[in-house]
Image (cartoon, rainbow, N blue to C red):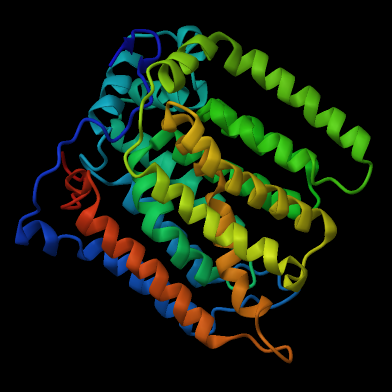
Length: 380
């Protein structure tokens, strides 16, 4: 695999680890992941509905976000790409702020630079990244009919694998979720700010812009033009200088992400559910179009995965469609309920489905040993 001295290792998180069997002791250390999942499941079962018209944040939900931020931030040697992020941190310590701003993904590198200048470590970088991700996650699930059910769906892959394993893209997805929350509330300026911030952490976040632009219902032409201008600016500022590297890293070298087909399928399932039942979801027209666009894109990833030589490109872009899983599965009990009542059996089914994903990943994924046992970065 080629390394670029300016940008660091190519985006191939998860390749460094080799598969080996987990010991009984390591399996026992999975308990921290199951504890997080179980707490979310309990709240999802006990009064997990969002009160309509309520703007007061659920205190338990905020505490859940704090717990997730601490799990992400205080992890030690968790994630297959941990050595790469340590290398990024060490390299940034020798750069000036001007040089840091010229790096790819400047948002992430600025946090590293500030941490090093203050005499901190990668732990503080991860804490900031964990906090940003958690804020985006909580803001997004609070827009869902059952916020805690959305948390249940998020934990097995989005939280544990993505946010803990792919630091830069994890923050970018957190900011994308915050942007989507702003969009559903009609705050287009805040949406734009969040999207720009997301692209500064990982260039591929620009992927969400056309999906939102096509969902606009009021003043469509000015909205599309504004988003088009923003996309052009983002391309010029963050992507243009890295196109050659991205093409080489994702396409020409034909990297193949392990389990890409499974992750694409995880998006395709809620996509099919939504497209077949979209009129049963209580949504404004712009929101309905947004989730329809994301659903169609999720299904388009299937032939794209088969046709493109390198599946890493599709795999990484599909990560930005994970919010579709949270939205559909957390809305399903209400959408498929009857007589104005939610379907409790669907709540149980979503929890069981998410538990099966977590069990399968922890026990059978190719790089589980990079996450198990969970270790804290305290006093090191």
